[in-house]
Length: 246
Image 1 (cartoon, rainbow, N blue to C red):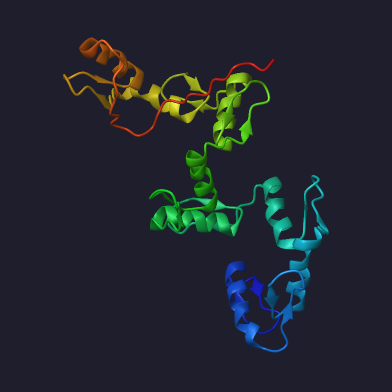
Image 2 (image 1 turned 135 degrees about the vertical axis):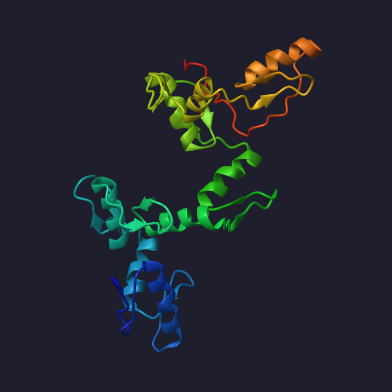
C-alpha cells in the first residue's frame, strides 16, 4: 500500500482513496484554508500544493522534455508517457493504464456506469472528456483545425484520422490480405469483402450491401432519387476531406 496519510497511520492502494480518507481529518483542529478560494485541508503540505493552482508555480520538471507540473504525482504520471510503464491493471481483462483515473474510466466499460449526463438530451458518458466531445454535437463547435486545409473537427481523434489523408499513413492492416487503411472504420468495411457480411438491407427487396453507399445506389433503382436510408449498423464510413488552404 504505497499511499500513506501523513496525519495518521492510514495506508491505501490508490491516491484517490487517500484523498477521501484525508477528509476525515478536516474536522480536526487545526485546519488550513486557502486565502484565494474556499479550499481547506487538514494538512499544511496539501495547502501548499493547492496554492500552486493560483500562483502557477510548477517546481517539478521532466528531464526528458519541457513538461513541468505543480505536483510530484502529476510529474510521475507524465514520466510514464516516456517509459511506457502502465502499473494499473484491470482485474477483468488485459487492459493496463499509466494513470489511476484512466483505469477508473476503463472499469466503467465493464460496469456500464455512465455518470456524466448531457443536459440537452439523454446521452450519458463514462468520462467527462467524452461528454465534452458530445456537447459539440449540440454547439457545432469544431476546435481542431488541419494545418494543411480547411478541415475542422469536433474531436481530436477525427483530426488525427484526417491528417492521414495528407501524410498517406495507413496504420490499420488487414490480417487476411495486404490491404491497409488510414482509419479503423474503412478497414472494418474492407473486412466484409472477406467475411461476406452485408449489414445494409433494402426495405423494398432482398438486396443487401456491405457498404452504405452501395445501398444508396441500389435504392435509386426503386425511387430514381436519393432516399433517406435506415442503417442497420451504427458506424458510418469516415468523411475526412477538406479543401486546400490558400
